[in-house]
Length: 99
Length: 502
Image 1: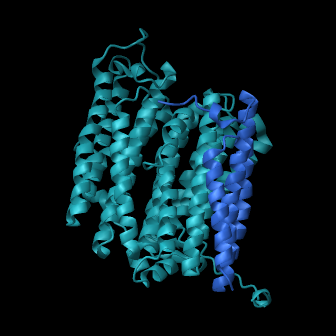
Image 2 (image 1 turned 30 degrees about the vertical axis):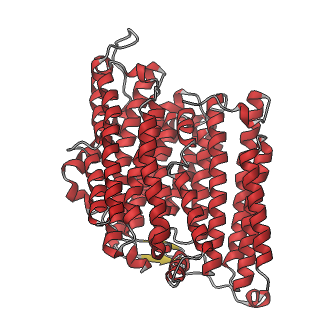
Image 3 (image 1 turned 90 degrees about the vertical axis):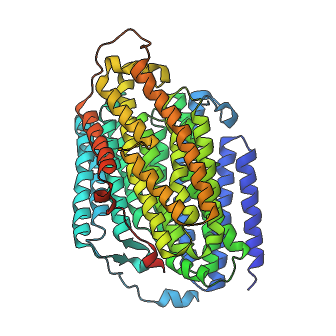
């Protein structure tokens, strides 16, 4: 089985995700970029599980999916809270705390 | 392959109920608080804090019986281990949690916040930490990490009509989730190398390699970076000052000790059980993290005007001291065990003295409503007791004998010196210089409290509630006892992980 293609796809997704988190200033887009990284992780885990013939990776991927759902729920609530208080989800406006 | 797995008969894993009794009691307490809230609504509000405190104390009972029993218990195929190390850390988390409940009691009620959910989330986060102390598998570490982080994100944003709190919550959330995603990517690489999610298997597989392939190096770097965020080590510290300032102060106290300790627990498990054989990868990494955290943390702390931000940067610098022993931990079992004990000792003492300092900050801010340094001017004139207590904690943080902090620092320097390596000596020198810098800002805060003139003219005594008083007593006693009779207490922190991992 060819492992390389999966790892390459996962590395590309990971890089796009990291770029998105660092460069995007829209709250929802940052959340989506984080999802990209997590899905890169899932591809990695499942590909390695199939390659090594063990089941641990697939189980791990299921845990990642479940926990990511909970995480994004909290994240969307936070973005909503920001929108309610400042009528924008642009993260550059969030810099009252500094020093 | 898939069919084989499906046709396997399901076998119930053997569960050692005694070993997971602390987690079960904590879970019950958390559920009970939520249930009481649903059934009794507003009538239950005055009792929630007491309920949370009792729940935490009840959790300590099975912990004590486990400690008396003293056998190492391995469960779920090695994914969950109850040994000396995990028991000590669990006790630390419970005590820290109990003090945070004491700190929150009046703060949350007077701020008119949602109390029941607050304590429910606090217990959930503590549950994650208690699990983290036992987790020895990528999956259980990940689940424990998220269980302790997600409630913490919510707690930081608790004052939801306050923009500062929202901002702090959002920043903490985004950086935290990003860090855990990067860490997961590293974990997936390590799983791919070892073919197993168990840390001890990963350890065996890494030990079997002559040199580190790039994929292993990447995995280790990503995992360490993820936890460096959790413990707020430079250069992954940028969230800490903002989040500490914006969050409700008891939550800040919670993050600065419990959440940091939880990050360290996982880091220690990874280093000593998983990565130990690849010390050429992680030793330089920890060296850089330690030197940077100490230096940057202390230098930036010098020019802070807000006491919470000052504590944030002081916490970053203290993190540097805690990481330092790991930079020379890779030279054999004796050395590794010493480094581990030094980190655990530091964590225990740091928890007591930092919580103590935050207790004083909360007590003084109850009247002034401000955490600016100037509001501490001349505190001796209106709050002499709190001033004395704060001085004890500040000088302990600076590492002056006979307070606990000196023993913590002594252990770190001892490990660095006995390693007999030029890198170890170099880091010890960086640490020594930084101790002097740190003493300057701790002492100048103390001088401000003793000698300066108060800013506002209201010199009435500051009321200290009974719960704050007990928190202060608890932290003060631990800080003093550790400093005066270190040998007696040090045997609790004399733990080992390498015996398990090889």
